[in-house]
Image (cartoon, rainbow, N blue to C red; front, side, top):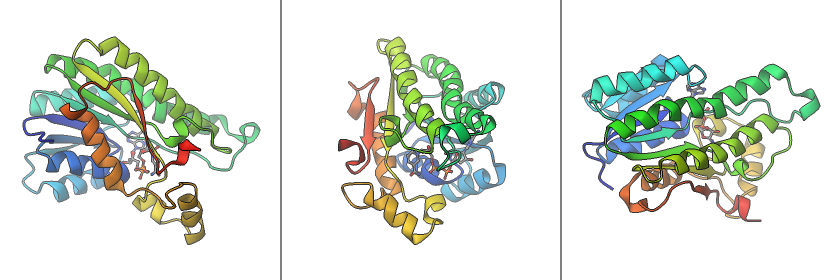
Length: 249
Ligand code: NAD
């Protein structure tokens, strides 16, 4: 999987999964535009990945705001004059352990506008840019909870299910136009945010997977790279669990 000469956007790349996916694409030769809300963290990641500043470009963007997303795509086209790949990864979990009657309206709106509407905003502008660059591929970040429920996290579950539907519709619209669009569903991943949780919570997360552990970030990043690459050239509109068997039972 050689991505030399390709241009990729990764949203939510200031930390966590997005940061690792950006690193994977950069190491494979891509020019990578990394986007997130917090500029300082984003610039630190860009400097760490590519101290030359030539191939990794940090753009502050809020996926909830369609103007901000449009600016991200415009900035990408201005800097690298093309877009081939996008990984729409930015997301929040919202409250945990909160049943629907107690779920605040503002929390619901926050999660849906980030996790679901945010991906719609990204697709809306990325597809046109990828089309004008001769085609490419997009991966949307759903979750294992995109196909099974999780009590106490209704907005997250609803958004992650919605991403799969959005992915399928967009994929059908562009299946014969050289743009492949897929979704992935990680189980719990050992990210810096999750590793801060108490040991008993980490063990509980690990036990949810038949493999008896959480995923490493690299296990998600390599799968995403595969779905962007020509090695998956007949795959579009798919949902791919990467969950150690979480959704198999
Ligand atoms: P994280 O909290 O570590 O990082 C989230 C990233 O998204 C950050 O860069 C943050 O700045 C960015 N972000 C949040 N809201 C944004 C907004 N409005 N606009 C732009 N950027 C925004 O999260 P993570 O654990 O790395 O998760 C990344 C994605 O993977 C999310 O969509 C999450 O739902 C999904 N996911 C994570 C896990 C897991 O166990 N970590 C499992 C399944 C799915």
